[in-house]
Image 1 (cartoon, helix red, strand yellow):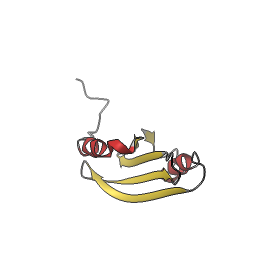
Image 2 (tube, helix red, strand yellow):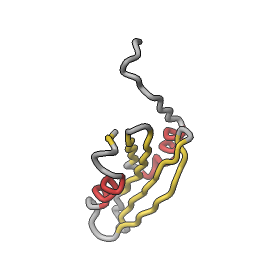
Image 3 (cartoon, rainbow, N blue to C red):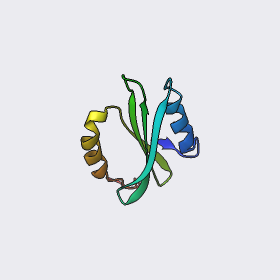
Image 4 (cartoon, helix red, strand yellow):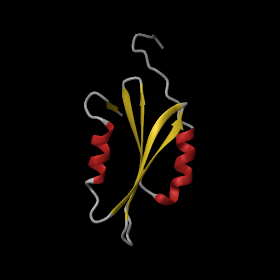
Length: 96
């Protein structure tokens, strides 16, 4: 989680992208999580030993959530996990 005032989403995407060497395939799309639009970015090296990152950025209230999958083989489970996310506002003044 990040306060979105500190850095825009592109800053985080560029940071991840800078870790790759050689040619990189990048794919971006929009997905829905908890009835909110989220940005999904997938990076993969074009080499045999392809490094893989699937990054999802979701902004709700003033918080940016970064959700990461590092294993392409677990993509289906990762998708199921993302669909199950529910984010509720936390009020510090409430007594529990």
